[in-house]
Length: 274
Ligand code: 2HA
Ligand code: ZN
Image: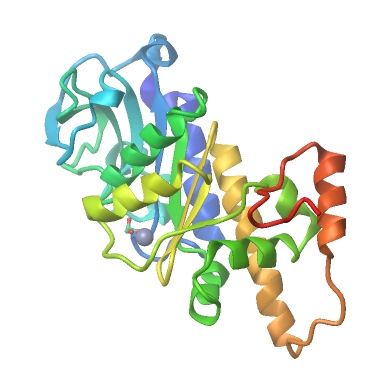
């Protein structure tokens, strides 16, 4: 048996939180991440077989009963997770009735899951309807995405087309486009519900003037998705820095060719089929 602290799950979350911090997306306690794990994933690990504390979830998570989430703690700094994972991370089992979180490991100095845990769990539930491999929800504060939410209309079609045209990579990585909710108060069930609703159609949801939610089947995929969206937004910012005048861009026809070539289906509401 391996101590859970030495698992690749903990190592990988440490690596991703550190990378996200280094990108400048997680000032202070900004950002949070959750990784869904099953009993099967955990059978080879020790130190996770006793309930250490029972936590209130604040909503009905029955659809996730018996599943485990390795999650960052509220108020914790992404910068520090790599040095003290057993304090800043927790492994939480959703109770059989779906009302409570059972802390099995971590948060050793009394910590609690991120204030956005309801948003994470609701997003996991929404994505699991379409994708049984859904594992990761990641939230952070990428600078150029946030800046874009001040200068652009908060319109999904507009954002999707703008970001698709900033680099050839965008359409291939997020062919369904970009989801968007209105500005809402973070940490509430309401923002969680609005985000999860968007997650029925998108893997990326923008929180205007705040940040981004991205999902995936593993940590690299969710992180890479956010990275690609932020890179497109950065290119747009750099265009502004170079005077803002666009002389040429990727055309709709070139986007269609790109989708065909990479075998992806571009959202037809955002890119007409012709
Ligand atoms: O974890 O980013 O949205 C702190 C936040 C809240
Ligand atoms: Zn945030």
